[in-house]
Image 1 (cartoon, rainbow, N blue to C red):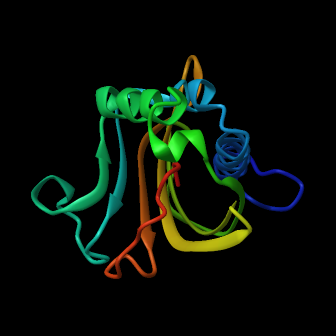
Image 2 (image 1 turned 30 degrees about the vertical axis):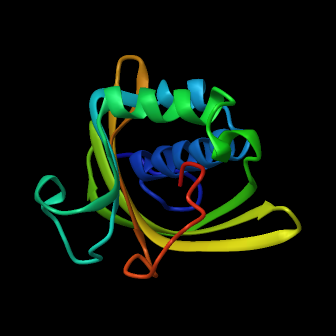
Length: 164
């Protein structure tokens, strides 16, 4: 595996750049482009239980396959949902990248994400540990799974009117 100038393995460097691109698309609310970043069988998961690994058998804020992501995007962009009409402006910072698995075809990487949402003169903070599983395909990198473990996931969350 080759390395870039900073000594980071090439597949990890590509994954980090891809994750930053994803964050930028979400902050711009470019949900169509975001949806294109996914594999057909990919899952977007925001679990309530911070320790769970069986997402299908536990309650989640989001457990979206391609069909559910499409419906969520339609709801966010239709103008009919209250969260879409007055959607928060968001800024994400993603850092502290730690490799879990690195190969030329597949990277699993954990990171820390701090998201600030601004709506109606109020700032809301969402902080979480994120795991991306990224598959490198002929069409470019694609997300197979993204799990966002919010640090306050067991609390009542009432402002999730956007994608994490």
